[in-house]
Image (cartoon, rainbow over all chains, first blue to last red):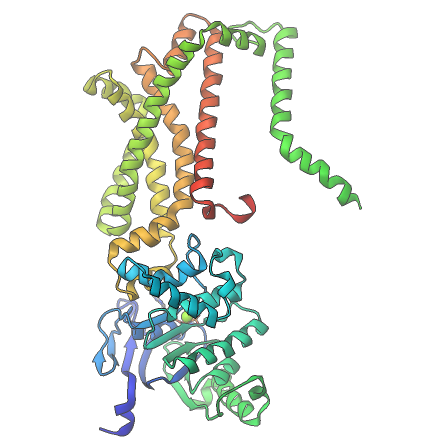
Length: 261
Length: 262
Ligand SMILES: Nc1ncnc2c1ncn2[C@@H]1O[C@H](COP(=O)(O)OP(=O)(O)OP(=O)(O)O)[C@@H](O)[C@H]1O
Ligand SMILES: [Mg+2]
């Protein structure tokens, strides 16, 4: 066994999926990807190329019709509970306070929460700078704060894998940058394997260790780019020549896909 | 500048529009009856209706009211007890939803007025048959609204539930049903007014008490102002019940009401 495959945590081998076997057209095909433990991988690609499909496969919410997805060398065949999912919309429950929303995964999975759990929820909220909002209702929070609560909720069960499906796309540019750095801080403090889907090339380069570039539907891997920009990264990272080079390389894939055909 | 002066007028109109309309309406009605010489059996004047109302002893009103209210509320409660579990079953099982929905539509499109006499023949003239008639009229909007609400739960939350590997009843109790609350209350508001109609229809067929019975009996004795008094009383009762459902929602589930309307 090679060293790289030993370290692989999430592995996709020739993965493909077809939502509608009658029509027979694949949504994604021939995806090969290895994600290492505690690695931050971003996925970019045109709309409808199958990014969400990929994420749902890692979560076990969708079983691929071709190939194999495995986590820690065990094939994924059903939903796994060691993943935290952050969606594009915060999808908080409007009838629960912020704290109860954060505690919801525990309450939902086990039916009860303990005082220790409540403390952990408060700690996580403090980490996200939301302490004073823990007794508020979700609709009293701004969109950015709601999305932070969504992230905190995904962290509650301390999952090995964090799956984020365009988590910041509903936010304005300034909030978006700030929350991105906040995410990096959280990730540095409690390392996790992250699969991060985004429409923003610069966001992908700014946050990730590696960026997976996907083609038009049926989605395949166009490129897998190592982002060798040193951490910790900051707003200044955007001004470095290396950042410009890497974003340009990805942009080329998206806007001139025929160059690689 | 114009805006700042017209704003209070607008506010004032918004708060008193209903009362103003009502007063104008009643005044016009009284004037038409007085000066148009409308015969009382076609349209009794408001004053004669008020007089007729006070001619009937208050304890008799209460007796009739209680008879109707009892049937309406029991039918309404029975209908909640049937329709919410039915909606849950339909949301959880595709097969059930496909079998039950057509049956529901058939029941709903059968005129209850036509079926009511049959029910009375089958079940007797007691409260039970009237409650059943009320239930038949009220449960369809409840099933539909509860099922619609539960199906409109965001897919993300269902995926969240699946990825937590939570037991399925918690998906129903902790996610789908709370999500359906606003819809369920819309259904309840429609149903509570239908419940009164159901009780009255049942009384038309067989009863010796109740506001419906009272109206029918008054009409058959040509006591038209008295029938009108009963009718208006009934409308007021419906309105109060409707408002009570609204208050209950505000009190129990304030989050389910859009923020600007709380
Ligand atoms: N439940 C489904 N049933 C049928 N087809 C689906 C389903 N979900 C997705 N698809 C199809 O599969 C393809 C990939 O969808 P997916 O949601 O993974 O794309 P995406 O890359 O996440 O797009 P976006 O950037 O717009 O979110 C799309 O063409 C879509 O039409
Ligand atoms: Mg998507």
